[in-house]
Image (cartoon, rainbow, N blue to C red; front, side):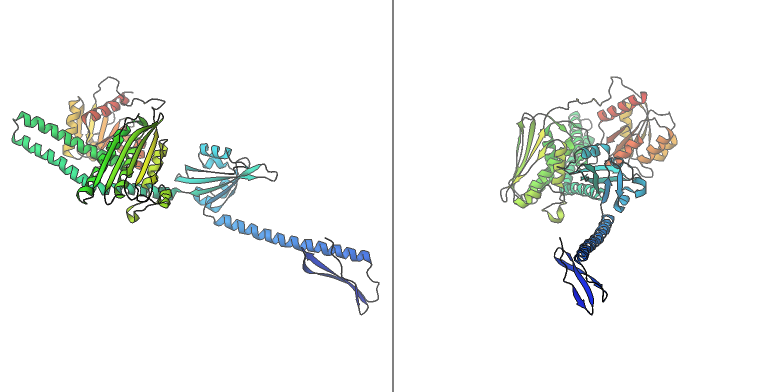
Length: 562
């Protein structure tokens, strides 16, 4: 825009020109040029040059200000990236790292100098990275995924990664921006809270479980005393043996359900499941809580069970048992003044089976219903962790199914679970290891409980094995000779020296001898990983039925031969 000059003025024989310096209508200053006295006045061309110079000065001042603003913005953005709690990694068009902030150094345990120029894909598992990198585009510029990986020092990492498409000047892809959040601590807390949720449920059922065990012990003790008083009465002895065996099996089944519910037994592979049996198992483990409400609290609770003919589904019975158990316990809590619990199984369509758990309790508001599957959301105050339904939803999704909720305030709640039906397309692998050959071997048996040591030894001897029973870990190590035994069976929880210590020292002496663990405690997930590292052949959970002991021993001996 052409700026006009002020008219020339003469003062004391001087002639001068004043040109305003303007930017977008605002006057930034003035350019003033004056001649000495007695010289000629400015001609029009000189005035025009001065006007142009004032325009250039306005542009220079504007550029100077813009440069200062750019420098300030650059410094601000650098400080913002440096102080961010999440890793911010810029990746060029070839997938190599070109920017690496301090949070990335902290999360991955590597300095910028170690990684700049290296492939970003080397930091995360390749499959999710390839999938996410292939999908961002100008139309859909952001992709997010979760990955489990490791730091440079080997520590595990759980990461939430967001990849953003970065266009170049011509609009073509010019790399990506990765925002990486370290979710390791949060995942650990969630796992702990999940375990707390299970233990809270077990605590609620503890009184009823103790009642059940006392009934079983009463049957065992009563018939044992009757048999002792009348050893010659064949009828009493026969009935006593039958009752004692059934009571012991009933107690073992209760412990098995508790251990699986608390995840103290290894995760099962996907197998064919009878959904009706899953429901029955869940009702069996929640019945003590149900009965406690009815008997102690005087709450009128009714159960309507409709188990229809449904085809088998593939999955983990223990996990689905946990889902049904959570829903039943929630239903009981939702009916503090009594009501009816309805559980139904049916065929949804030709590809899906449906389990419906419904109650006639308080129901939910729309606000609660929308959040009911959110992690840590609970309406139970300090009594709940808010993970029961969130975890149940995740379990059902892992089974390829769907868990929904239908509820209105004062009208009860219904949870329909939809699961795909059908057999595993690859078939179920036979895991028995049986080849029709009955093998016998030299077995070192270790257990600190004298009664358990005796009965397990008798069971093994009855099957034809040569058994050396020892009551402690140190004694086992004293008698153990490499290649002197075909199998070692050791209890896990022993004083002085645990089964873990026994297995590690035996494995150091003999890398090939099979080792079977037997435990009455159960195993945590990290224990199961430790078993795999030690090469433990099998796990047995007390009480061990003779057929199961025989089968696991045969599998171990067969593996020894191979």
